[in-house]
Image (tube, rainbow, N blue to C red; front, top):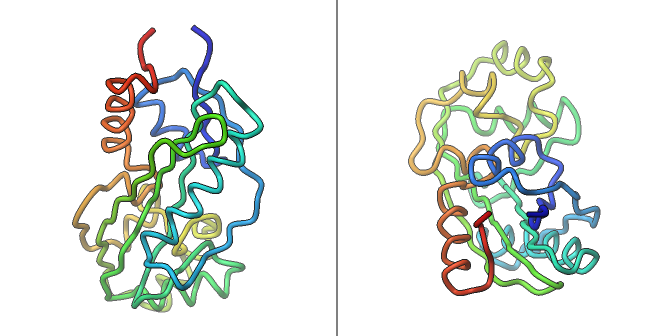
Length: 196
């Protein structure tokens, strides 16, 4: 069977997690700009970006099922995306220090340029109170630079996390358990096949 799924993301973490469901996919990252609409709710904002990614890649690749995703950290109602530079990463981590924040990952599934399913998962993450030295050491590791909120829970960022409530893999960037179930529901509806 040919690869029928496209992951519209350059994230190595999403690629690794999707392999838990199937290895029958290729990666074609979306290239469009990620523009957030501040008038929408946090979940709607992230879902809109995921849909844009999935539709963009799906329109150029008919015959494939395209999975787009977006992860954003929300703290005090503000969205914290990927840091622009080390100073920005330091500011984000200072803001998250000693607080609970929310990580929302949205997943959109598209075929022939149309969304067939979109959903989002939300996980609460609590950080320890961090010293300036801890923040500086973590920023200098380089790990925060390509991650929403300026940290990666699956790496050295685990040292900052006091606890979570919800899906751990959602914080990594793909709620793989939920995605698995949504794909199987689409299969049962005759829209998609995970079978060999």
